[in-house]
Image (cartoon, rainbow, N blue to C red; front, side, top):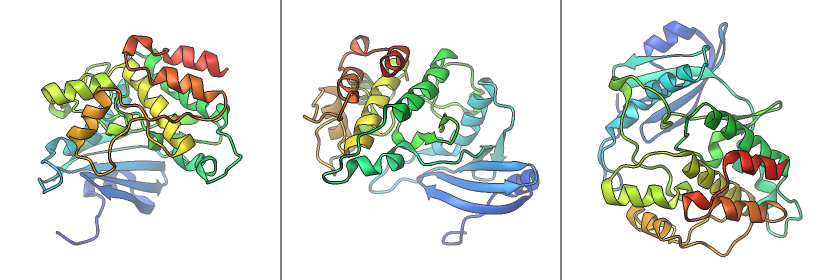
Length: 278
């Protein structure tokens, strides 16, 4: 019912029988819940189609994203999960990861006149999480600060609905149409502008991680364009490499600059980034 509080689909309630549940996010075709049950502690993702508005074109693929992510996670070897369909789209549940995301953790670094430098061990944890995915032959496609959860024992890379690298059930698959432009590599932005679609790559993931580290450490995005610019204008700026004159402090600065190289072949691999931070 429009205007009524969101509820978990019955099929998820039956599968998990929650002892507690908390709505974490409900926007743009996606709901995320934190659910505790006798079975365990889970993140539950529920997708539904976005209707066309003055600001957004219709995005029916958001209804498929949770099941697509579930299929990807299964391919990557995660077994403590399930995914399926509900009346408006698809859902999945997967282990909940506790901890701040990268942007939250580095908030003290961004305060005016802060003397706190971004710690390279945190950056290395993000690199290791992405390297683990790349080693399995996959590209994430949606690397951004909110998708690195800095846990007490390791960093987790989440939100793999757009990942590419293996077979996904045809009924849940959909074309990659780019991600948040702040973290989009120039070649991805150009392809989306020219064709409406792109192919996620590991080189583009390295760029996106560089952009994520930069904005988390400094508060500034990598590329220069107005905050309220349409996405097409943002993408043109990215595709043409309109870099801001901003550098992360300390030893991260030069490394991030290399990761943000305009040409994919000029960027270090994720393994080279890890070696530089080690």
